[in-house]
Amino acid sequence: MNMGNAADIQRRFSPGDVLLELRRLSPKLATMSSNERAIFICAQFGASPFNVKEVEVPEEVLRMVSLQVCRGIRCLPISFKDGRLTLCVADPTNQTISMVGSKLEIMIASQDDIMAAIDRLYGLME
Image (cartoon, rainbow, N blue to C red):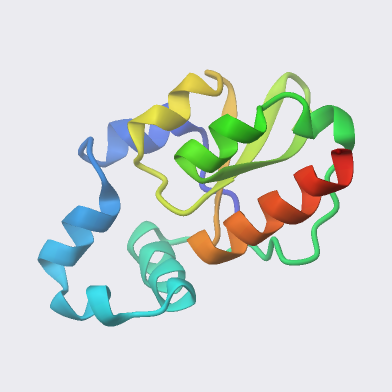
């Protein structure tokens, strides 16, 4: 499910790291797996987790966001259409997401799955 653009998310939810806020709200979150956290976060935002495990991303889309940025903010570019980049993230309120661009569509996946997809997809470009 599409979360909407990054600016909308940041307007709807208080700034800051959603994982820290959710840890405050739910002591069990710290003991959850990466996948369980993704499901929990999606439930907070009324979204469904995006499956990045087998996604294929065109090389021209991957080149829009450097490997260093993807690893640093734990995001994965998925597609680019009509001037809008679809970005998969584990934390949709992370304010550093906006450094990628202003016209973003946000998807949510587990951090572990995103990092594995980054390694897989960017590794194919080398």
